Image 1 (cartoon, rainbow, N blue to C red):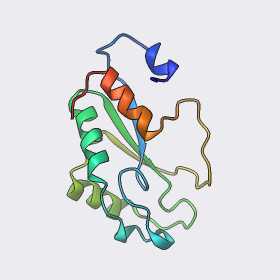
Image 2 (cartoon, one colour; image 1 turned 90 degrees about the vertical axis):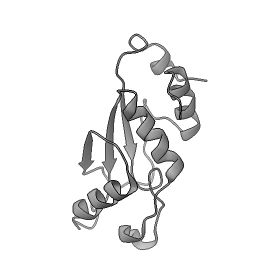
Image 3 (cartoon, one colour; image 1 turned 30 degrees about the vertical axis):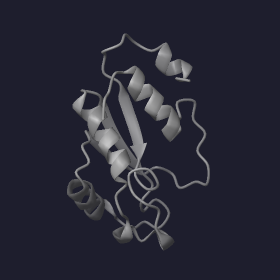
Length: 122
């Protein structure tokens, strides 16, 4: 089922904004948060690129370095470029947490239904 906030939002064909986490979504989770070991999740990157290509805004939001203070921005940008990820904005500073509760949260399964409703083909 497509979440209500997607069904009831603005007219079909109008640009939507999608915000994706990096680790565990676009790339693999790695031991000890050594992001240099991250590997791309090609299936998700294909979906993100299709969303981008269909004219929707793609924002990437990450907690990389939030707890440790390590600046992972250069490595992250290089990884995203080498993996071919298309995006409009990359944001650091997502709080490090065990759980995120959000009224606009989508599971990966729900994302598939949303992009189908928007007519995005992979």
